[in-house]
Image 1: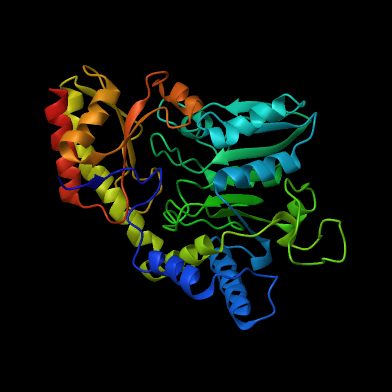
Image 2: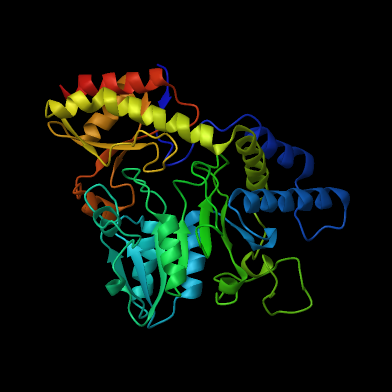
Length: 398
């Protein structure tokens, strides 16, 4: 049975040529740490790590490679940013489409005296203010309190693919003196992101989704003004300023305690170079075309009352980012989990079913507590695979 992988929103597969080889090359030819060895192979790996910071900095429109901090994933990045910044008495704004990578740390912080308000979104995952008001306001100023410190927002929903207005929100935050933290789990490597243009103070990313790297490597980029306000979540050896037991003040050492995931960074270095060569615009165009093709193929099933398609229709202009390549559906006459199981066992079509670690988003979309079956497309998927998935879904829903 041919495997059709449609779970790229969870992790991208396959990886581009060269990624696995870069990890293997590090493990077999180098294997050393950085900032701790005074020999040529250690220096070579230090150069590779710096080059990766530089690639990420340029990829996201940053100013300084030292502002790129490596972590294990976007979840760890968001925890470091949120728990390092927010103090008892602070208030933050989040969209109602957030993943638990934002909501669970907030719930923890809530017990310490931090409060939050959800910016309402409509049943398609769009900020209600931005879709209902013909102004540049993204949400009502009335949501801001005297103690509001930050806005934390996902760039695109991992449930329905809707893209939120990050640039408008960034300008809003800058005008109102709010810190803006963005979760790019579903957009890094897919949509063009410019920290300066979008007025982003901190951008959290993961390497294993749209950036097409291995699991276990992620990070964040933050400006120096925000870095000075953050209390590091982790502390320990950095290989720098080893004469003192106090935390280093320099970036990125201040937030990178312990030995980094060097095999992961090597793989990410390779995937970033591949993305730079291919261009995110062409990859996004491909994923959006696949999304439209799949939606057109399954829309008759919705017309027949066999399933419900979640989220907005893609716009006709290819490069207007209203959504990414994520399609969620609810089967109306059959159990979701059973359909997802049969898609895999009978047709080799691999999807994700359930609540996708985003109960707030599902409540907004009207799909809670049942959840959805999610089909998410990547750079290597084909139109034939879309057709096969649509045909299998039709056979199982009838």
